[in-house]
Length: 196
Image 1 (cartoon, rainbow, N blue to C red):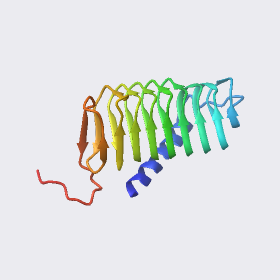
Image 2: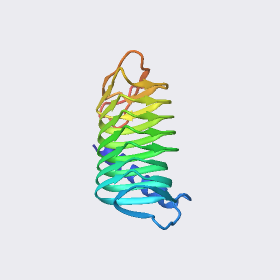
Image 3: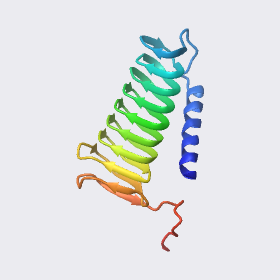
């Protein structure tokens, strides 16, 4: 649990630091929105509120925060955090998600970074996925390698993973024979590592 908290805090820090340091996060006329966002936004957009629903096309970074967060539309980067964080849009680059429940049904051209209690990936990821969660379910398409630290991992027959799935050896894993899964020794495990 300590590792999960650390990873979760790290992801949130990276989300906020990336958003604020990114040249795409330039000040614009409609940089902030309250709970909903639609239309086209030149420059980055920050949407916040209790229930956030963004379907905007953002020429920059979409940063969404709230309790229930839904991030759709198109943008260069997506960064979302909430109790529930769902990405159902299209990102030209990377997607960063953090929440209790994280759902990916959209399309990321590059990588997805997700931290949560439950993470479900049913969308399309162009390159790799980096996931820290208690439970992970993969049903979508991933063009590269997948790195998972979790207690339970389920990879369904519908998952199309081009690379290797790397999972901590303490996880319970269910996957079809068509998926290449490699386990690694979890350094935070209470069991000592084998001597080399």
